[in-house]
Length: 240
Image 1 (cartoon, rainbow, N blue to C red):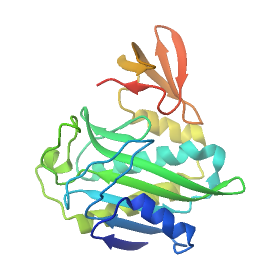
Image 2: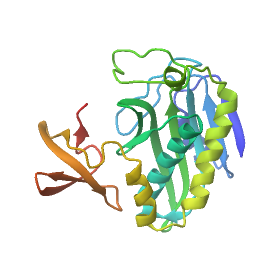
Image 3: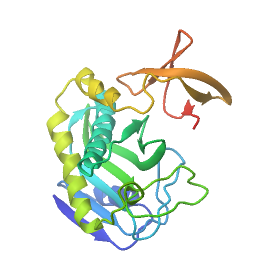
Image 4: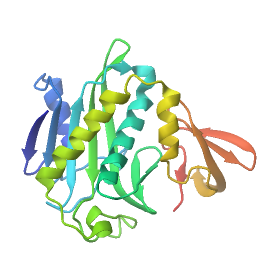
């Protein structure tokens, strides 16, 4: 895998997308930066990060999985970050659809952007923001936490980027041919507040429900007092 380090960039995903469009990346590549001026999350979300304290990177992979299995990729990346944190002695969970939590606090976010050839996802930009050494977080990030907050250790980012990027690559390579149900079983076992009654919000209305499943297309399945409901990305949020 090739690694490219940038001192500063607006967004690693945007930077990599431009390189891919110009066919300047043809092999597995990880581009990481010390600072993002406009880090992006799902939809209109932004990713805030203190300069030179955290892992901010985009990994280009070529999974060549069928488009209909796009959520498999989301599950595999989420699981790989949980595995990386487990290597550090930290148990993490996956908050649907694209956040990684430790306890009840957010330690990482994921943004995956795909390009297609025929019925295949040919290339994927796996964007990750992982809080590593940041001590405190602004009021706009009320539930942020870093690896240093948890373990008390300071991490060398140039070393850790290689560990986590290779972990993501390894998990995708070993799991991409598995059936959805096989990946989902592991995913649900690592899911934040799975089968736990929690407060959700949809269309401005709050209600109690439990997460009971995820569908192949990424829909979240909730049980609200015996009524089964399905929600897609941004249609429902967990109230913390």
